[in-house]
Image 1: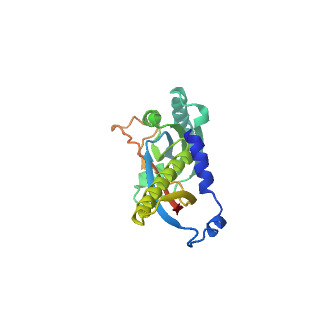
Image 2: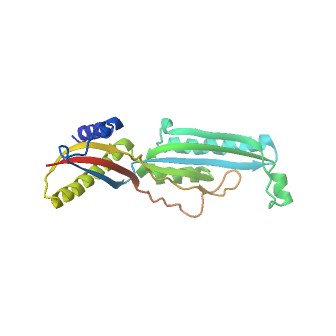
Image 3: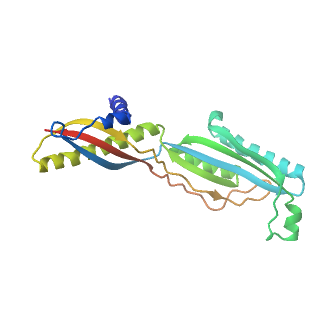
Length: 240
C-alpha cells in the first residue's frame, strides 16, 4: 500500500512546471500556496566500507611482494568470514616510487624508496560493518576510510520525506483557511524540489608495521549514523 502511495506521490511531484503556470489567482479560482520543509531520519540499513593496505620498501619488487602477501590475507579473511565475493570490489592498486617526507630520517629514506597500496570497497548490511572492519584490521589492513551509511532504497526514503513535507504543507494550509473562515479543498498542484541527502563517513588511517602487521591494540567501535533525507514541497490547495 505504501509503495502505491509513493508512486502516486512521485507522479504528483513530477508534474511539469507548465502546469503551475495554469494556476490563476482570481475570485473564481481561490487557492492557498504553501512551501514547507521536512526531514526524515532513519537507521542505516547498508554500509560501504573502504579498507586497504599500504607499505614501503627499498625496492619495487619488495614493496610489491609484501603488499600482495598482506592484501591476499585480508581478502581471504573477509571471504572466509562470509562476505560474498560480489560484495568485495578492488577500489585501487598502486605501485610507485615513494614521495619523500622531509621529516623522514636518512634510514627511513633508504627504507622507503617505493610505495605500494591497495584499497577494497566492501558492501555489507549495516549490522555487519563492525565485524567486517574488525576482521580486515586483524588480517593486516592498515587503512580504513570512507565509511558510508545508507538505506537500501534511497528513493523510498525521499518519498517518505516528501510525504511528510506535503502533510506539513496541508496542516499549514488548513490553519490559514480556518483563519479566513474558509474550507480547505483539494490539492491542486505539488512540487518536490529537494534531492536526497545521506550522511557520509569519515576518514581514518591506522598506522601499520611491515609483514605481518599485528592486531591494533585499541578496539575500534563503530557508531552507525542516521540516514537523513530532506524535502521541500510547494503545494497549492483550493479553498471553498
